Amino acid sequence: MNSSLLERLETDAPNVASKVAKVTLAFWIIKIAATTLGETGGDLISMTLGLGYAASTILLLGIFLASLFLQMRAQAFHPPLYWLVILTTSTAGTTMSDFMDRSLGLGYATGSALLAGLLVVVLFVWRSVEGNLSVAGIRRPRAELFYWAAILVSNTLGTALGDYLADDSGLGFGGGALLIGSAIALVALLYKFTKLSHVLLFWLAFVLTRPFGATFGDLMTKPVADGGLDLGTYGASAVLLVIMVAGIAWTMRSPAAPDAE
Image 1 (cartoon, helix red, strand yellow):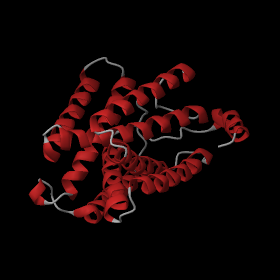
Image 2 (image 1 turned 120 degrees about the vertical axis):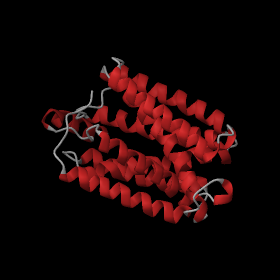
Image 3 (image 1 turned 135 degrees about the horizontal axis):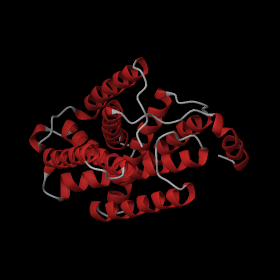
Image 4 (image 1 turned 90 degrees about the horizontal axis):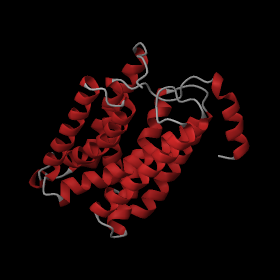
């Protein structure tokens, strides 16, 4: 995106409604479906269709940038467009992580550590430039760019962490999903019963839902002999797409909920 367009969008920002989804229970359900679909969809393109990790990453990053351009140009929140960008960050994140960890030979633990460090840097710069990390009422293009950068990195991190838990930790797909699911439940309890920063807890939950999607996606696609449900990448992707579309349609028919801080 060129600087003149960004400056024009920044000037118009005060008159623009929030560009991102409100954080509700439906948000988390759709987000988990989208990130799990990103795992199965990324694997479908890179492995089932045999495109490979590098070519798949280039293709999916291109699709992500195209969807992000449309999102940035929009003057209001459009649920299908917003969730399309979430989905493209997730599919691109899947193949990016696999390319780093497998093709480049970094391994899941090293890849996870590098991506966690990168996410900290993105959030630190965002906090330094914008003054906060709140995801409520994002209107300014600069804040929105930080928002999507953090989401892309967190989804890539989640794939690496999920693969580490499923493959290297000895927990397996089911054990990894159970561990991450328990961590998400703990964050939800902290949100409900403590005074910890809701912004901090949001980003913790956002990061954790990605490895949950990665491990749950593997659980859905892998053969029964390997501890999976043997739906395959096509079957699992189809099921998740139906859940995601149904969730988006439901939120578009429901009254808006208050923003989360």
